[in-house]
Image (tube, rainbow, N blue to C red):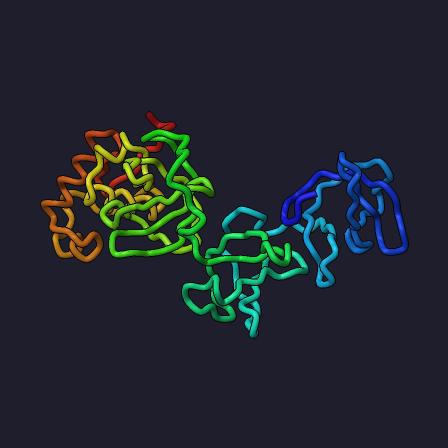
Length: 281
């Protein structure tokens, strides 16, 4: 029975301390009374997270953990002592990140992306903020243009680094960032380039869509989206108002608006510009 993972186990027997759950191999783990439902019967199956308690005994909980073994997550530091930083992992037990696994000294109340692993000496779950050490550059099982799940973990001079599908290292270049992205954000992204060194360039828009929308056009589209699909700006708007709102000249704005119109993304109205949803096409 793997520590640090969620298992579906069968209720085997009850004691005054709780209910013992059993896996297919006959291994048992205690589910304390506080987590035992009144309607739980012997023979019922239940999904639980298994970890070691403070006395190094396997114990189960029905609480949903924020991180599991061999996965990354964005967690908050709740305490710091001589052993390291203790992060809130969503269960009674907190996740220790030793100082040796902290590239930057962690502080209480701050949030960090960490990886959950099993300490070989203590067999306890620990965290590590040495993210790059746990990312792969081989065995990439997707192609350029594919949709992937990403977790952003570090900003660099080139852009924002991301963890792709909990396995691979990705980067979205600063020139491809047209929306607010923060460390810890999780979202869908698209594979732009798979490099020979195994690192992956990604975009936040599908490749075909990205190719027909330049940076200034994307800015106009983003602002239009933030205004619930309509704003009062048109190709006849005051140049200074356009510069203040969009950070571009009226000529550039008109070109961007024209691009969106040609792509049938917007409808030009007398009093403004309206976004056309895909269902309107």
